[in-house]
Length: 398
Image (tube, rainbow, N blue to C red; front, top):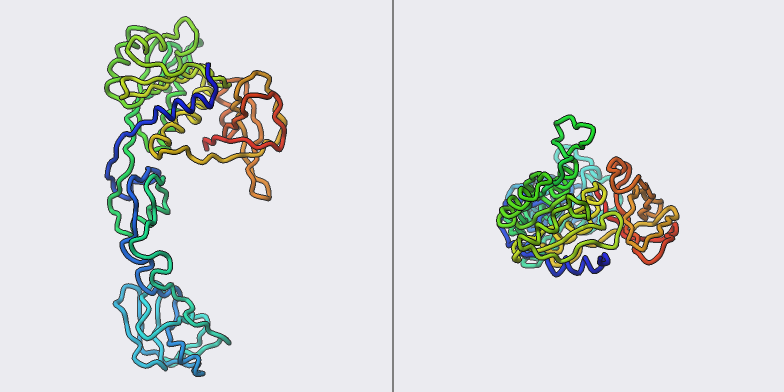
């Protein structure tokens, strides 16, 4: 049995590169960028008007002029206009290119316009006001988004502005999620007294969907021959196999033995933590990564978020994602020398700090308690009293 930190070191050493692919920009949300983005032009690309109003030559205002005859209009999308007489003005619209001969924009709200003349109704005007000047945000040929960035709506907006109709992203692994056990039935069926519905697989599949992975799924009964036959095929066809159940010490927990017989290298089995201690991790011929999670729902959920998603992010970006920390709001007593992943409800104080309030359930089988919490807080082993006010990392699932 190994420590959490040892498990993470092994996962890091087993990170995989699944290659890259080019996809439409609009489909790239939450994907990991695998190319550097440079600006292809200055941003903004021209001196841009930021308010509807009039454009003037500031020298006329400095000379004492306060009423400006209107020569014409410069709208967004029109080619660059020219102010013919510096004592006059042009009406300018938000987003339009600043006309030649104009360096200052005055809002309509600061004007009284009558008979084609715009007169100031404010006491002061500032030179170059209400103009977003060319290149003031970023100059052409400047790195604007580095590779290994996880793409958000912000990056998509930038990508559109620099002409990235297609983007190169990290290719996602092909994943199979498998539930095991004779006690499980499909969710549309009415379980008998000794049965339960397959819930873990749906929880795991939707966790993957949040990372844009559309995984396949299957169910294996407690039949060693069936398990071996199907796993043999899946090991050749998938990059990742995530199993739920069948990895503890029960009489029908066949997975560790069968995986070994199929040539899967066990990298570890059991971690000094609660819940999720029986977690099994292995590798098949450096082509398929296998994560066999405990069958109890809270255990499998913890391991999915703490280990698989951490491994996936490291495989795609080469680094661990920054982890938020929260302040424990209540004392927690936990005697076993294990890392404790405790369910917590998240809130915020007036200083903007994250608060974690324990929502302890009835053990690793209490999946209903997951709906009362928002995250797991990781309380490292080595002590049995965790005090209110102490700060620990959290793994959110909302």
